[in-house]
Image (cartoon, rainbow, N blue to C red; front, side, top):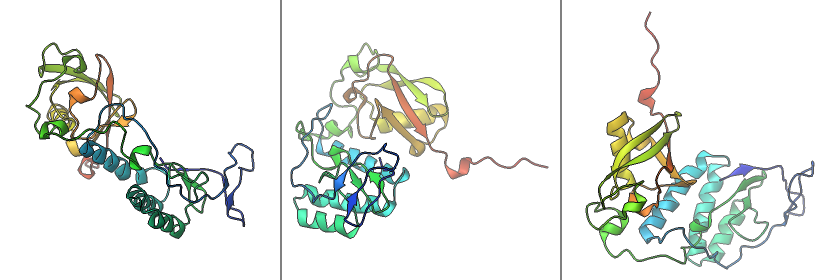
Length: 245
């Protein structure tokens, strides 16, 4: 995400190496290149799934290091870049004093030296994008279509109930009874019923990538005994109440 580094701007507009020698010499600011990055998703992705993945990133990125106004400018620049409006994208970057040492939005710096990294999926669609032929592809109809039993953590029957291993951010491990046709949103609600944790406070991750609510379990290729990480954010009403007199 965004991170602060020790680089700084000099009077010529270049980024210098850290004084302790641990940084990377980034060179002068480069204009935004027109070439879109080419990449392949780990699984065939629909436009709706790509949109959800991007929304997940832009919703969480400002919560990490970096300045929100820079994240907002980068989001607008990324949108203009993908629409081939390079003049607008460059104008947004210049207006926010964002430096591109390599001419790409994948690595940027603000005027304070904070580092921002945009994933390639925010800049261009994957080469293995597939069309959304029906609602079942994005998980809005969880009861339609057959499931791959091998991806449901050892399920023996298509669409049958299976056990999914979860590791909560509280440190607790548990197994949740789910179906291979369940969407992540449905599984969040199952966990809410099981543990009393509101679905809106759950963020699911597998192999380091966030899982959006519309993805189905049988699309995630989760093998037996693999663990899904569940980050829980405490809602205001769960704050500890003071003890009585």
